[in-house]
Image 1: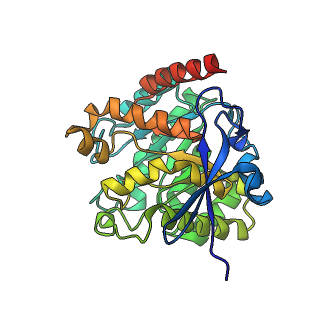
Image 2: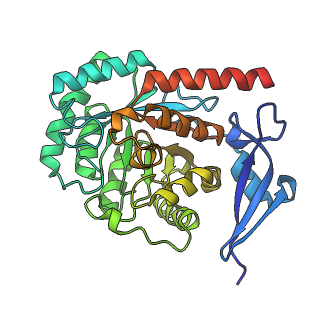
Length: 338
């Protein structure tokens, strides 16, 4: 049996003239061929199998009206929870959450991700009815006040997703990658034709940091996401409606998080849009000695820019205005180099 090969696009610097990654802004002329057991070697992109190049160069289609593959989209985080790791308790009331959503719109959000259950390490389970009560009034009000703004429901429970999509959400962000209840999740997707983000996690939030053993974290996460994508495609769901997220901080150590960020461009090989969610996370605080999550802006911007450099189509962030400003400067430098 042939050894499975993985191909990581090596992103060129500003002014690169290589192939366009997923039809976007990043370019590559070289691939790193990776095999389990430690084999890594660089090859010319033109020597790669045709199927690999096709997957890596095919443009990713829009996921919502107005979405463009020409730049990273900013998914703004809006937690209606009392216990999220960064902003828990700040937007518990529907009025405060809606006001926050309106502010995120003004700051430049492309999509607002609304969650009613914390998924921080050690977080307790929230029943579907309580979670729904937290998010549905916010979705309903924001849909009325921001009719053009795409809204995302951040939940692992299909029952909550079903109700949120019926109220006006149009994107389904699932930290369990539908493993919480696959059959019900598939039915929700069929009923609403919504894009779905499948995120990798080693276990449920309450115990995931006790499950950080991998043979090779990058390849193991890739294979796991590949299997989840294949399972959905086999049900008839269009791959173009699937987004993948390697799950920074979800059952990973500091070094494992860094390995995933360093190798992020590998995940374009799954043939789906790629989301990076690293905003304010613990590994940033560990590296910088910043205990308070709200003080991790500079580190969050650094990781977001690295994600953009590697072609991530969606960046999930708390600090929308600051991230948009950083991306504007980054893009201006890229254009100047060209």
